[in-house]
Image (cartoon, rainbow, N blue to C red):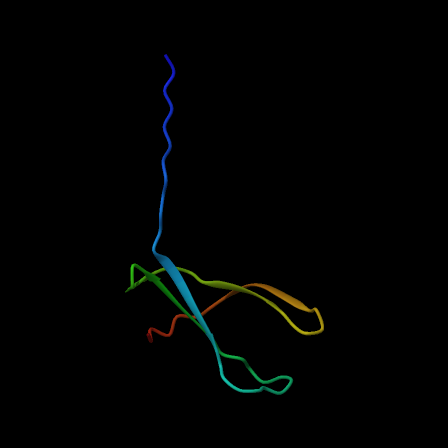
Length: 71
Protein backbone atom coordinates (compact mmCIF):
# COMPACT_ATOMS: atom_id res chain seq x y z
CA UNK A 1 0.00 0.00 0.00
CA UNK A 2 1.35 3.46 -0.91
CA UNK A 3 0.58 6.72 0.84
CA UNK A 4 1.23 10.28 -0.17
CA UNK A 5 1.03 13.63 1.56
CA UNK A 6 1.55 17.28 0.78
CA UNK A 7 2.58 20.12 3.05
CA UNK A 8 1.87 23.77 2.28
CA UNK A 9 3.43 26.74 3.97
CA UNK A 10 2.04 30.26 3.89
CA UNK A 11 3.52 33.50 5.06
CA UNK A 12 2.16 36.91 5.87
CA UNK A 13 5.64 38.46 5.60
CA UNK A 14 5.61 41.69 3.62
CA UNK A 15 8.15 44.38 2.78
CA UNK A 16 6.70 47.76 1.88
CA UNK A 17 9.28 49.86 0.01
CA UNK A 18 9.09 53.62 -0.48
CA UNK A 19 11.38 55.98 -2.44
CA UNK A 20 11.96 59.65 -1.67
CA UNK A 21 9.55 61.75 -3.69
CA UNK A 22 10.28 64.04 -6.57
CA UNK A 23 13.13 64.32 -9.04
CA UNK A 24 16.75 64.13 -7.98
CA UNK A 25 19.90 65.39 -9.66
CA UNK A 26 22.97 63.31 -10.38
CA UNK A 27 24.88 62.80 -7.14
CA UNK A 28 21.94 63.51 -4.86
CA UNK A 29 20.97 60.73 -2.46
CA UNK A 30 17.76 58.80 -2.95
CA UNK A 31 16.08 57.71 0.27
CA UNK A 32 14.73 54.17 0.22
CA UNK A 33 12.57 53.10 3.13
CA UNK A 34 11.69 49.46 3.70
CA UNK A 35 9.13 48.40 6.30
CA UNK A 36 9.14 44.63 7.00
CA UNK A 37 6.00 43.23 8.63
CA UNK A 38 4.56 39.83 9.48
CA UNK A 39 0.77 39.69 9.72
CA UNK A 40 0.74 43.49 10.01
CA UNK A 41 3.17 43.58 12.96
CA UNK A 42 6.70 45.03 12.79
CA UNK A 43 9.52 42.55 12.22
CA UNK A 44 12.50 43.38 14.42
CA UNK A 45 16.08 42.23 13.95
CA UNK A 46 15.92 41.41 10.25
CA UNK A 47 18.40 42.59 7.63
CA UNK A 48 17.16 44.21 4.42
CA UNK A 49 19.53 44.37 1.46
CA UNK A 50 19.08 46.14 -1.88
CA UNK A 51 20.47 45.65 -5.36
CA UNK A 52 20.38 48.88 -7.39
CA UNK A 53 20.83 49.56 -11.12
CA UNK A 54 21.40 53.05 -12.53
CA UNK A 55 19.94 54.21 -15.85
CA UNK A 56 23.42 53.73 -17.37
CA UNK A 57 23.46 50.10 -16.23
CA UNK A 58 25.92 50.47 -13.35
CA UNK A 59 25.00 48.08 -10.53
CA UNK A 60 25.46 48.01 -6.79
CA UNK A 61 24.66 44.80 -4.92
CA UNK A 62 23.99 43.79 -1.34
CA UNK A 63 23.54 47.31 0.04
CA UNK A 64 22.43 46.84 3.65
CA UNK A 65 19.75 49.31 4.69
CA UNK A 66 20.28 51.04 8.04
CA UNK A 67 17.61 50.70 10.71
CA UNK A 68 16.69 54.13 12.08
CA UNK A 69 14.02 52.68 14.37
CA UNK A 70 11.27 54.75 12.78
CA UNK A 71 8.09 53.24 11.49
